[in-house]
Length: 342
Image 1 (tube, rainbow, N blue to C red):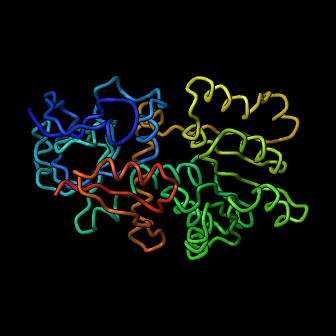
Image 2: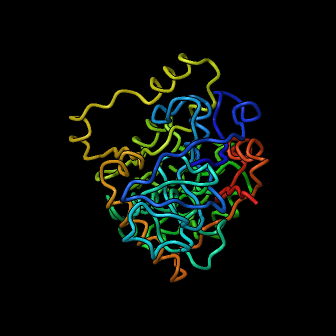
């Protein structure tokens, strides 16, 4: 089975990394479906893969991408024939940058009417946010929550989920425009970290209190800072390493990134009653697909009830994939970046 795909051919800049090629897909397995893609979403992990910083990515050349919207055109088992023609939002374990995409039956959810650019944020980003905020560790009323990259895809959803739980939200962003977005979404306090050190601003806001939760997609030096800001019972969710993208010195930048995070001993966490929770949704999808399925259903229910409003970022045509990647990598993006085939 042949299809067109945006193939990651080289590590490096977006303008040279991708090529539109014809690829061959394997035969469908009984628990799989074939989707004719309408559009796919971009995630920060895609940028990390293109930069050679995401070890989970397949060897080159490969097709990356975790999510898409499209219609099911074939099934691996005749018992699922009724699914053909159904429009769905779907996860994929890579491969979403293709026109035809194979994925598992338990990785799809019906999507009859919503626009693809709205629904796309309900896949990887919303499931990640919901997994952290509601599934693995519940936010409680009046918890003080710090959200890094609060205007991005995951961050904008975390603001909403935190406010639904009754938390006090501190949104860390990089521009005045993003501060306004965070406020509109319900953040109680906003910090533009390009103007002042965010840890100083937070201490001023807290007035002697401590953070209960930090959702950190940055890593590096911010980990030590967040741990100092957390109080007893505090949780640090570490779900990204955006600071790595600033490095220009290969292995030396990676070593510096790790050094800045510091060494944290389990006994120290116990004595201070603090927790660090590492989150890699690809591993959860591999080993506990039922968790992804459950989170996806809950997220869709919140969306349909109007309690969760995805933030639409920029929309691109597939011919402009390099421009889309550059925008996401620039740090200027807000909400979800979506790429359409037509």
